[in-house]
Image 1 (cartoon, rainbow, N blue to C red):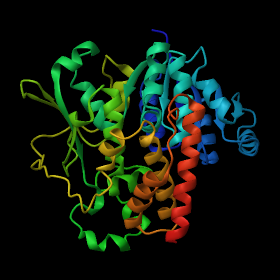
Image 2: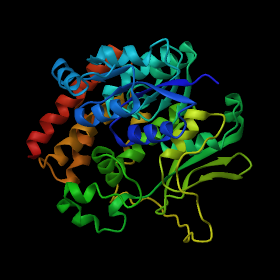
Image 3: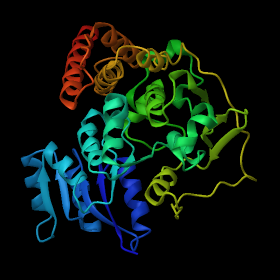
Length: 392
């Protein structure tokens, strides 16, 4: 078997690190072709020394020079800039791309990989939240194989037949499970005093700071609702959310006959990563096996709209003008960054998101191209930034 060449975009984040862990368990099956990172140049350098990719991509010339100095004597070509990300993602020798860049910055290389017909392992929510129809059209026209890596979407995917044409005939609706984050039982009135460290202390998953805050507000679930609508070609009303604090059932498909199909496992991202890499086969992931004899009770709860006001924005933006979901994503990125910087309170994140959706003008052609989407993203960030200043 010829080893598959893998490009890992966002290799120093939690998804990237877990991907490299899975790849290292199957060295005869996979080789690392390219890695990229935004800020953690020292960590990227160590990954390059361990995995020996052909390319390493960083944001700019300054970061590239720092990385070259750290890799002196090593045969790794260092590239920089957004165009380089798209270049390695679409490289003719790449077999699969792990798209794990956080935020709207990951959209362009995802589009490049899709148009080049790659096996695209999608851990970047924003490609679908921002790109939506544009991204799915690129997948179809490029003949790409799109495989979801979010634990919830991977769970849904694993519950469905390989023949995608059968999905619509089978699904009544899907249920995305949510842990509820660290504040599931906390008095909503006390959330104004939450610190960034408290918001990032997820009870079940080890994640980056931005997605950890999104989990605490449940904006990550709002983005996942939007993502699921596009991944599985569902009406917004066919996507539902339930709290499941144990994070053992990763999501469920409710079939037309009301049978419920669920995927279970320990909360370890290496499982969906391994599944995406090997699909339709299954390979060792390194995750701990689920021990039913030691398993505590599994419980489910409805979502409290007072504690999690942002979740409803998923359905309102899906029902709004095309481009509304891109505005929501941009606003949330600005709001979370401001909270982590200590500029606004935790309970003001929703205010920024709702204000930005209300005040951003969406043109009728806003979703027609990558350029128009990025322009809308920039406008929304400006509106959100102004509101952050007003709150500070």
